[in-house]
Image (tube, rainbow, N blue to C red; front, side):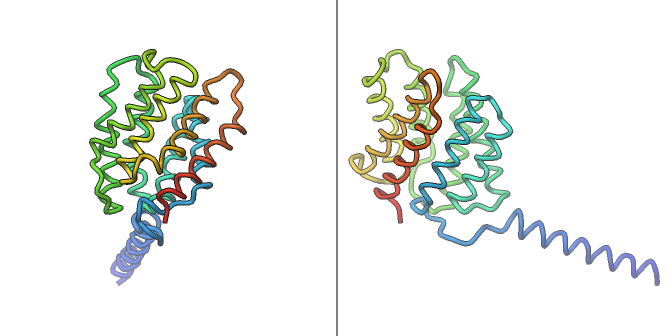
Length: 215
């Protein structure tokens, strides 16, 4: 009898732990799954932290902030956010350490965007969006992009293409958001990083994007 009672208690414990795991890791938070529904100021705040972690090569912090971003932006479960973040963070880390052969990050970028497409019910092509993402990354490094304002214009055009594909929006509506984000990246690249200025530009960028495509 005692053994049977012990097994019964064990089953109860297992059931409780499974319920907690489902509630914490598997169950998605309430809210819209639409890719157009997001808090622009919160995303800007998280992105500043991710940029700081990326350039400090703090991969653990980058991953943690990326998980939080995906959870809040797409209303992923923690489990799904971790899976998507794994691919996107690995793509960013690989690119950061690379000096060529940048296309090797595409499988991870595509995997991350496929998760977003399937979860949000969007119609974008993950492969095309992944290439557009990589395109603006590489444009910032490519000497052919020029320097100063000319370079920023090239990178902003690539960023505009990314937003157009991802959000199914006319280029003219998302061009300002793209330009502001590129201006933030350009400011970061200058000597003596002005993180307050970077934060301001990213907040303006996400507010512009929200006004253009947000719900």
